[in-house]
Length: 519
Image (cartoon, rainbow, N blue to C red; front, top):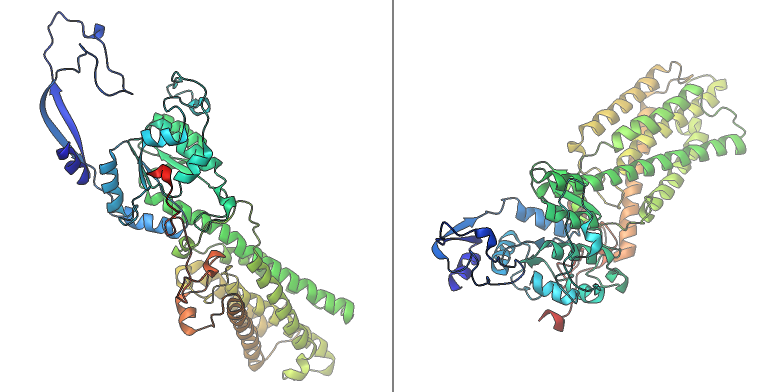
């Protein structure tokens, strides 16, 4: 036993090889066989009185990227629980090596399957009937004998916030773990170490024994090299059998949501600006033709098609995995997005109103006096387009980050499309053609660029700084702009005690009080 403990501590599995000579006339099928759920062998079984030949040590080294992947999951608010059939010593050693366990907080973090079943179920050998639904291609699992079972959700909720390793586990243990997590309502207690919404559970597996848990979970993840039955039961298949691919999938899933938020934020803003502009021009100033048909079509092209290309092409960055998960019923348009939409709409409408009305007084115009209205309409058209282009950069961030220019170099599509829009607008400004009746001078165009880009960008930065100062009391600094230390979600607004830094708490950082049942 001591030798096995040393072997397990070195992350190795021991496989014993033994033999026994039986008479040639003996029919082995007629001999009593051992019970896999009970220790020891009955008298006369082929497995009794064996002669040990030796022990083979097998080591499955941990992938080099698994430790960084687990750290990323922790930062993203994803709690990982390792369910294995290995002994507690082997599982603990592996979990410590890959960073899943903190050596200072092992109490309650490692548990064996039999003890787990004893705490959450009155009888441990009964498989829940709903767990045996498997594909037609999978072997059917029969119910074990025993009375009806009652799953103790309260006892389970006292276990899982700390649990990180479930060793010597059976398929029943894995199923019970998934069932308990899916049904847990511990988030309603308001504890800071629990996400404020129900648990979304994903389960990985590669064999028939994992099918029950994969079907019970919200997302079943199968290994591409696993059995076909498990692949058929899963929603996601990892073709490379690598846990890091789960992290990549998580990142891109969040990126899809954020891309939709970016475009909605940009679309609603420019639409409201355009509506307010038309209302002011047509209703208040009786200007029945504030924009020509070609100008309206160009604005629609910039607003819809090209805007979608630029804002939906941002690559999935590492910043997506530094935020906690969102609630299942959380609206797509967040309060931060509403603030950006309302503030930018009012700011841009005010600028368009002022410079559109007084364009002939502010800018130099050498044309005929009867072309004054056309000149004002032309200036207004260019100002709307330039403000829209400037706002595309601001709308790349939906969580109030200071540096909305961060990551531009990693998105060549955004740079290329935004540059094309800018060049086409310059061509329209100098050539006129079907877009404008009059052309504007270079100094007027430079002034409009300065007003549009400088005004919109400065206003967005100051608005973010004022908002975070109001929420946290921390003033805007150059370091916070360059290092992107603006909080990313509601939990980040909580300052760490004795520090001015922000931090997102997770179940890995804050442990629950000791419970007697974990002893």
